[in-house]
Image (cartoon, rainbow, N blue to C red; front, side, top):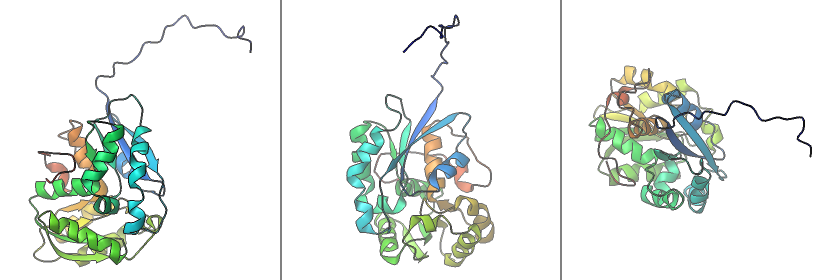
Length: 265
């Protein structure tokens, strides 16, 4: 190889000060079509960088298949911007967070990235609902019944009352990502009950962020979705206390308090 046609520049590179960088890690399923776009929409990309890793996953979305991701999480976390400081890592699968458990996911990710806060959609949703002072929730999910039922049990176990729960009965997260916003709005309004304080629309695959404003307008109640809750927690952990993306719900008016890895809000 010859180098005589290339000469070293006389301008030594000046490196930017990195003190103000806000970096987040994001672990998504190999089949995920929605999470990245939603976080790009919900977080201010002029001040935030999102570094993404994918974890192998095969449909159908059943508890058995979701558990198979557990031993792959540390490797996925280890691939996220090695050597860089991360404010938090988000694992973007709501149903798997219920099946595997918030604490176990946190432990697996922290094996590769010690001391980095880990955000799961379920943990984020619990913090979000608590910040909204909502203890009674109506729930909409896209899953099969056998995948949706543990979601109801999870929130009940953590002190919430699920007043009503509906599911779309889908088993492939790529199909879940194709559900129209209008369908999500109509189904969320239908699952609402008079005694619910808020609505929770579960699943990071659903394009539910675009439905939040209309659901809140039609029900008069706050709405929490998986990706919205994750972005809210990430923004607060990143020091963006006043970040309020337009049309993304009452949640972004709330502060985050007492966040603990894998623990209840």
